[in-house]
Image 1 (cartoon, helix red, strand yellow):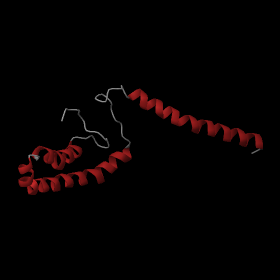
Image 2 (spheres, one colour):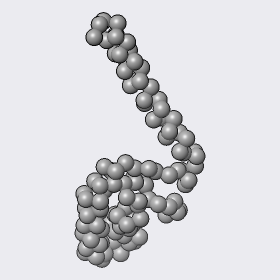
Image 3 (cartoon, one colour):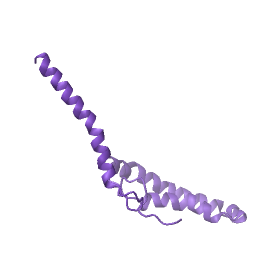
Image 4 (cartoon, helix red, strand yellow):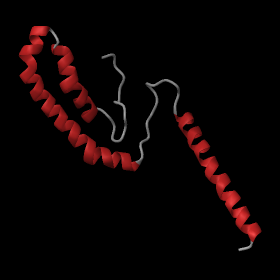
Length: 114
């Protein structure tokens, strides 16, 4: 290739590669309505596979271990009046992340006042 064609090719590839992040940002902005309740996540396939193979089994194990820790700590939390807080932190939050979240998403599927 001569010098002109090489320069034109490098210039074209640079222009295209610099325009790609701008197009990706526009796609994200078009999908979000501004209201977090109606924002839909569209996770990529690798995030779904990683969530299925790694994150979900760990979250289920954390829910089971948290339930056991909650039962062990129940007499102490009952004395201090923090049963609801400890149950939410040890059992409900990991369980919600394991069973309510869509595959590959980072937020739960609903927005209720906790």
